[in-house]
Amino acid sequence: MLLLALTISLTLVPGRGAATIAEQRARLPPPALCKDPVSGVWQSHSFNEMYQEWGRFTLTIRRVPDSPTQLEGEIVNESWYGPKTENVRGPCVGRLQYIVSMPGEGRYVDAGEAVEFHGLSWKMEEPLCGIDGGFGYNLDRFSGVIDHEIQEFQTVNNDGGRYVDVPTVFRRISCDDTEDVEPRVTMVPPPLYPPKENRSACGGS
View 1 (tube, rainbow, N blue to C red):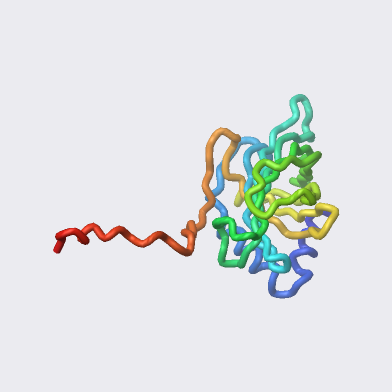
View 2: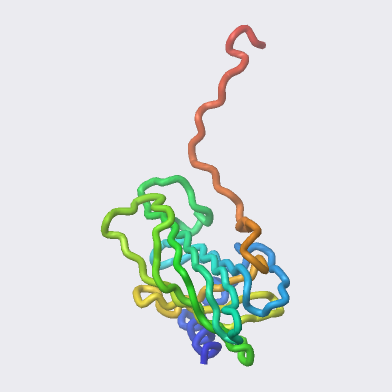
């Protein structure tokens, strides 16, 4: 059922699902090869055309001791609003930017490679830009299947709000949460720099 729902969600808008998934994949770091089929650090990097919103999710998934199916861990979402060309969060120019975290839990069914992982509560980690007292956040819930050949967790996100069956591709980038991984995208400098100092202004040639 999870695989069927994911397939349907990718074909709701003809011609766009495949392109969107390919674009998400192109932004992600190379995969890590791990012994455990599900535990590790998984990352996504997607753009929502309708809301002009970027989101980079990081799932840190661990096995619950003595359980063959239960999972625990954390979800972190770095989100910013801007055009499709702004694939890296830029300077604060009045558009919403924030980082939130959630303790997470879920389950993994090995027979069907099916995974469900969701947030339990949320905490504002960094109110980067445009955050006021009325800010709220819907808990993310990812469900889908793992493709072990390419180390991808192919999911849909349902947060109980405006994100309903939104395709989100995660790639496992680390077997644990002890190493830092940078996104495989080109950093965009701020649009304006101070003028360069004229070092030859005093008697130079």
